[in-house]
Amino acid sequence: MLALQKGLNTSQRNKNKMTEKQYAPTKKEKKLIKKSVETPVKKEEIKRETKEFNKNKEKKEEKKSEKETEKKVKPKEEKKKRKTIAIVNAYNIPISTKHSAAVCRFIKGKKIRDAISDLEQVVTLKKSVPMKGEIPHRKGKGLMSGRFPKKASERFIKLLKSASTNAIHNEIENPIITEAVANIGARPWGKFGQVRKKRTHIKIVVKSKSDKQEDKTKNKK
Image 1: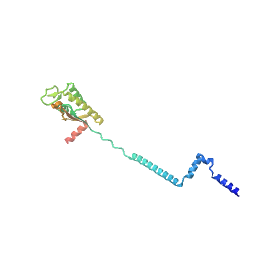
Image 2: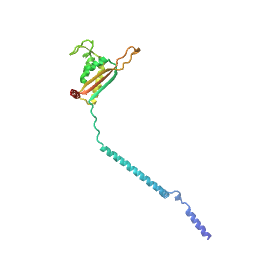
Image 3: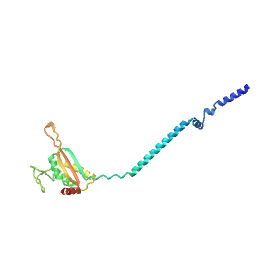
Image 4: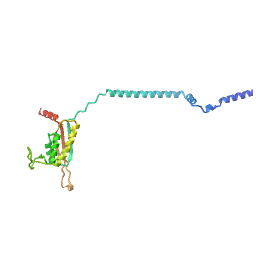
């Protein structure tokens, strides 16, 4: 009897002992062990996470589709209104206000090209600018007295060129100088405070010829 009991105990021990395969299992066996170890609670958590992920994905897709539909449905933006005026402003230019006012009167009502060509002739002393006051007489049709304001005319040529570029940008056809104004600027004191320097503000407005005629008809009415 004792021998039988000893034999049974040894067989049970051999069963409880770990084999070599169990000590070093293969990849497939490891996966099977992990699956057996996973609790039902973990499986439920994984299911919840997958559901949440799918919901978020669906929401993103819906938002994308809504944005695409909005882009398609959106009406085309209205075209910007065409500007009919081109303006040039210059502040505190170191030229005489008297000369600049005379040049403004000389330019007003002319085309930009014609005004630039006339001022270039003034610079070369071929054409004079009519001016009021005790000034010497000059040759020319309808001229009584005038001068050649070289410095002022050079500055005005630069301003007129910038006005022409503005007119081209605003798509103004047949641009004409409708307004040219010169005002006194902030005159700083010179060295030792004995002399005040000359400064002027200039404003030039350009319009198309057709717009100018329309404005005249409106004013008559």
